[in-house]
Image (tube, rainbow, N blue to C red; front, side, top):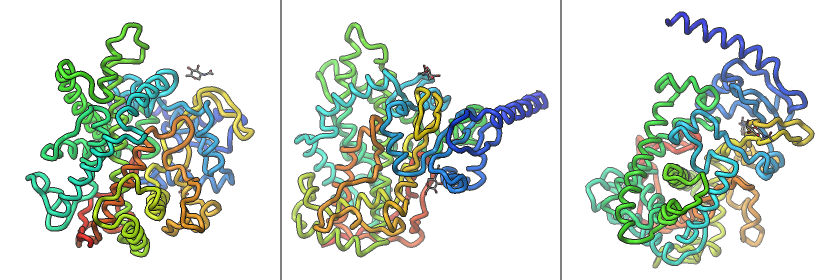
Length: 504
Ligand SMILES: *[C@@H]1O[C@H](CO)[C@@H](O)[C@H](O)[C@H]1NC(C)=O
Ligand SMILES: *[C@@H]1O[C@H](CO)[C@@H](O)[C@H](O)[C@H]1NC(C)=O
């Protein structure tokens, strides 16, 4: 049996090799000859196993083209490595597709095309529109008095725990003797906020460990796939090698999150019968009862949509805050200016609120600079062309994978002058007010991150509250370097105890 498999694998390799060498479509951007099976991905792994995506900039330079092409496994791929091309790709509708047919993407969603991050076409439009329409009613992406009050309350709980110490037994695992464990301490704040919008209620402080559990699973999932999607995107057979390519880890954590959502959805359904409508899922469950329901609506679709909102919220926001706090230790001059601004505008009598955001341009600029300096989604989310088209004079066939290198934009000297420096001033005009933000940490066009407004507000609020209340320092034996982070589809900081000295 085994020798036979080896022979089959070998023949496949030969076959693929010839196929890839001979089949680059004519008229397409300058290309790299790939190796069989997972194509140029071998190069990437060889060049930088931990951060495979970093290897491709080299080819862009070698081929002297900002637009290059290659094969990832069976997928013809185009990579854009400059602002103009990236922006244009994000804005053009024919590049709005996603890898919705990928084995991995379906594996995470009951082997179907569900959710809103990795799907495209009519069902994606329908579901995204419905979700955003009703999530707005509960405070997602707009000003909303009750929601903001609850968020403030949530922030108070976090600040009180950090200032006055743990109250519950499990809080001692993340907060003790003036130290706090990042990003772990941050999960409840961010997950509870999005949870309220979706489920219509919040977890109480005594139940926060449940939210931290969800956050940890989310982290594990994100870290088990690299920015390029990993070999599982390109060669599904790697899924059958257990954990060799992290497939087992990603599915285990993925379905742990799904089980979590399912459990509370079932609870909600029991309650919902009696109590009427709360949160976005109330609207969705009502919709499911309608006759003539559009075909994409289903309870499974709802579950993956919920996952697609909570998962990115849980991992990206907490990562950014953790990076920001580390940067404030690294760049004390910036920290000093942020603190002075907050003291002058808000003082210390109350927490910074959403109202204050316009009056704290330097603080906001520091957050933007954090997102630029540490590009947590180096390649955004990979797009796909949905028809044959011409782009910058090149032919782009239907079903081409389109990769937009956000990391390149954020580090382009032509664009920023001194990208290697951490300098929030680059986001300010001479009069100290914010200038037009040209960075695109949330993407652009139709596939713009649906949570941008929500994320910007909550990140601002938490960062400002930390700066207003604490001084930070590293703890001996803990990760201190900026490079102490994990690769993944999102770049995340290592778990890190940091000392918080109350600031007065
Ligand atoms: C993206 O840009 C970064 C930073 O300039 C570079 O190191 C990397 O190789 C590029 N990646 C791709 C996929 O082109
Ligand atoms: C592009 O390819 C997809 C999937 O193979 C197909 O469904 C679609 O109709 C194609 N688009 C066009 C415009 O031919």
